[in-house]
Image (cartoon, rainbow, N blue to C red; front, side, top):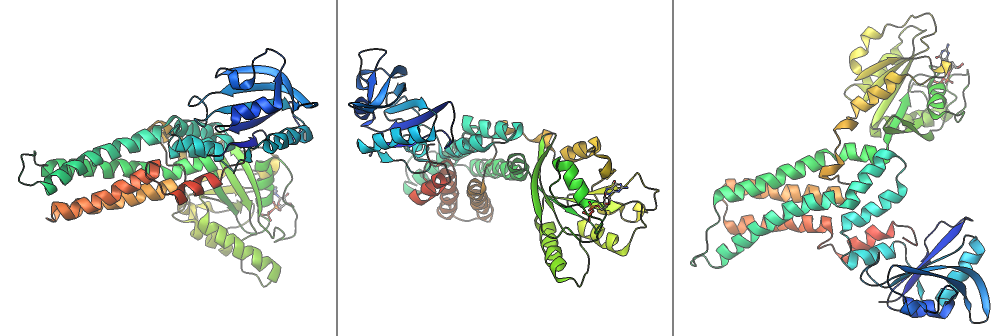
Length: 454
Ligand code: GDP
């Protein structure tokens, strides 16, 4: 396998940059570009987990001074010999050091290649590798908690547990099918039912937690809807804490969807300010209305804004009706105005309702607690493992479907042979989930989403 190198720190000026080299030739390569000043020992003779200070350069010409850290296989991130060079954090100097390393025989690392090698060398499971990326991109405490639990292997252990018991069952079934006359203890029907039933129910739990987990990781996709002029932009600006979308007194001026992420308690809202839902002949606004309706269909949360200083109108009722059965909160805005709004007619369209005066510039605390309740953040327990992405979800879903079919055909009196095929199918999906039997294409797809240097 080639020896790879990449800059592992962000492409920006900073105190230090780190260039990482991994592969068989890392240490020899380090000898060629690094002369230690803190000792006489060249990198190739350094012990694992030790560092040295010295000059980085090519024979006569010195590019920089810095520190190298040596990790010896298999005790390194990738499982191979790894050298990390910390040099001054200028973009130019860092790129010069990388270029020098490449000129001595290393090849530029692909995105995620260090972590991919770690996976291929058995340093971590595929789900743990995926979590590395989540840790890097975590924007808040809850996301980091999920990513950390995934890295620590909670999901892997949970799936492995299911997969091991199914594998045992498969082995017994195979022995029984192949040597029915031998003295092999027969698999009891009871055993088959218990193992499959437990596999299905554990996968059910994981799948049920997927949406809450996704919300913790990625935030709640939120649509702010309402007639023109009810205060949607004002609310959006209030939540976002800055003047982002244009607030005007002319009805229907918010034409495009403006997006913004805000944090309320444990929840991140991904807000989009949409044009008011209403019938209109105006072509430009219609495009916005279409977008808004689409947004309504795909959002995790709807904040429906009403102007309580006005009478309840036909449009308000229409908007309220489209929120029925969804995760929707009525924002009864302009509570500072003399109240004319009859909320009782639409109250049952919403999960929660909150009075507020968006113009007064304070996010009502009730909104935060209503959302935490709505999304049941306190019930999410990263300790049992969380399916972190669509790939993992679909593997779990397919495995569940196969086991549940096996269960029902078995109850219907099918032969062990027929049941075995279905169980085997499900087991393959579990092994794909953990990466123990993932195709090269799946593995490549996972790592292609990483950044270079990780
Ligand atoms: P949008 O068309 O729904 O986005 O509404 P805007 O946010 O542009 O607000 C329309 C008008 O209502 C503006 O003049 C706002 O200042 C005003 N407004 C927004 N919220 C409040 C509120 O809580 N009380 C009062 N009295 N006026 C508000």
